[in-house]
Length: 210
Image 1 (cartoon, helix red, strand yellow):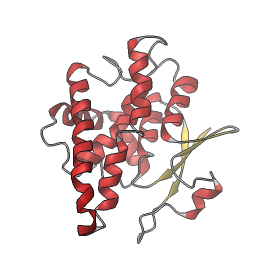
Image 2: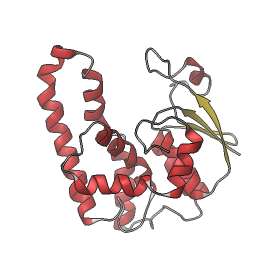
Image 3: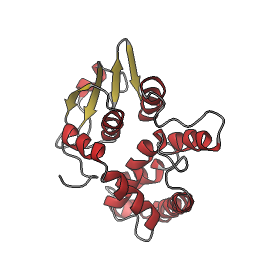
């Protein structure tokens, strides 16, 4: 049995979505954010030293980091789904966006979120953050204009990884003018497996209301 250590209203929601798409049996151990700080509870440190979600237990394996979890589930439990052929252009895109989603793409979004608490003190950083976000969303928009999904014309694990930065950006009004990005988010959020995962995961600010 696969167990997902899931933090409410977090990026671990996309792991539930992947499991629903794959039709795998799983259980969820729910954790709630501190209502004052918004941080994950200390209990998650008993699962993994980083104290963050998601963490997935598969037998004796304990896997942290969303990209590593997606790669593991697609490779070991996917039965060929969402995994392009090794060596193909689609596979290279899959690996690229699997890392890019939590690497380059998330950094300016996180900086924007954290500096929003600083008021005027954040003013010197605002132009740099805005420039970085424009660079990344221009890049993503260009890619999605020429491809149905992030790896190409079929869904891959990269699409599960990339949904969160785009959902977060959309919810904060950062995707205005990026029609391909908006279309991608809406298309993914309309999938039956995505909606089932929302029902399983609980409150999630970045998804559609169900």
